[in-house]
Length: 404
Image: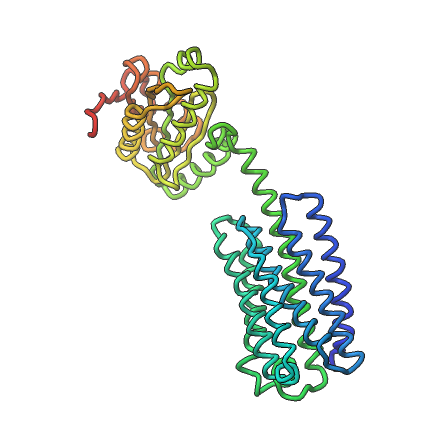
């Protein structure tokens, strides 16, 4: 039984209108999620396209309204889809594309030769629509560093949709309309509209899912981030640290924990106030992040105390990282209300090579190593020596010459 194209278009129209209005509601409730507005516009323009294509079927006439304006609305809908992808990836929309792409089709549609030539119309409409979908897939691919489970299915759907439209051009002389430019046969138009509707519906469902995943990720990141310094907080330390230690215990790989404590921080606060102390903390976090790898983790444990987890790192390597941090911070100057301020830090190192894979044990040993460093004169590094040893037997490393 042939697929009835009018029924598919009518059903698609109702779904597009419903989803478009739903996206408008989402946008009104969360104005920061401007991508919903773009995708609402895309769905509603797609609904207008369905109405004009239904009119074309009902009247069995091809004119500038049903062909020219109908395809212009479709191209505008895909242009809005691309802009929605850009906004979702925190990039500015390109408004000119939303106007110029359908305008190009309308301008061509005013030419009788184009309007009356099916091959011309297929080449032009597919040549405009397919790149817009491909660009949407590219935008989502470019933001792949943000790990959202629905991202890759959306990339696949956008790519499939773009391929589906683009392949009409090389198959133009081989398949019936609307897949090609040969005379239309029963069922082919319905199958084409059904494929268009299926891609649209899948894409819309995945977009809602990905937006929900973004919201959950943002909430989780905010809950695990120190608002002053931008470092991860103690809650993140407990969760990520446990998972990291479990993975290293399974793989039997080395890992080190650095405990970092700013020296005489109370005196800084007393002299410059809490805002001055905040400036020093923020500067220190920026310096530490510059000294560690992207795969390492920095946590603010509380006050002026910080921890670094260094995965796949031996004790000697961790000591070199600690010395780089200590030396760079000693040599740096923080501007506090126009006054240059110098500060130092004491660091403790604990490794799973010496203390095993318990996060609490590593934390306590590195913390004790910091206190040993402070007793030894501050601005230095102590490497905790062994599981059953106290800090009297820890390795207290002397200060190195500048630039060493």
